[in-house]
Image (cartoon, rainbow, N blue to C red; front, top):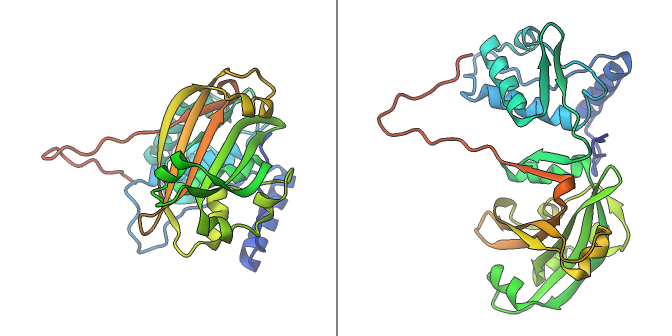
Amino acid sequence: MVTPAAASTQLDPVRHARQHVEDSQLRRGAVAVPSSRTPAGHPRSPVAYRSLADELREAILADRFAGGVKLPTEEELSRERGLSRQTVRRAYQDLVSEGLVYRVPGRGTFASARAGRYLRQFGSIEELMGFAIDTEFELLVPLHEAVDAAAARRLGLDTDQVTTAAFRRIHEGTAFCSTRVFLPADLGELMSGTPELTEPGVIRRATVVGLLDRVAEQPVTEAEQVITVAPLPAEIAGHFGVPPATPMLRIDRTYFDATGRAVELAVNHYLPEHYSYRVRLYRTPVAGSPERRETT
């Protein structure tokens, strides 16, 4: 259902050997989850259950547990990772609350069917880059210069000149997102040799923010987003094969580099029947209240 992305750079020998072992395990029917065991003598993170939940989530979204393959038991994960059963149980509780897994007493824990809807949880730039893991990027309008005062203003430019491109994102053969990106002219020039953004019709596993991270001097470190519901513009209705003015989930993301400069504006329209957006919020400890710690 979801296929892990092929790396765009060569794998180092250690990673290649690890992948070979994992592939062999998969062929034998053994499904391994990447280990996050803390080396001896190092203090364990107070959010160990979140790290474990993140790894299990990625494995589930990459279809490592598709087709009724049972996830590891609490006892197995506790033993393999050196974690307490309480920590493992909390990680599974998060996945159950997200609807990613379900538990059958006496049988085990299984990945939930997602019924064709694309589901990911975003809480970091890396997770946004994770779009490249299990979706495809199809370029519709190649990178070109344009005058767009509104986009330039949102990028904080002192000129109306921007560089822009349009693409759609596909999951399991279904287009679920149409995106138009805007870049400052100097960064657009740096991206001018990137096939993903210059060859119409090209289909790759990539994200613009990931491509930008390769060529820009400063890494992308922050993003802000605005979520609204908007009618589908007529000019991109053909990207989905639905009528213009169809209600869409619109998410505008502005990315910033380590200096605070706005380096990309992405205007996204999502088909709600094929996309589910979920964010997990954490409460900031109240002054004077006892600090909650993870027991491992």
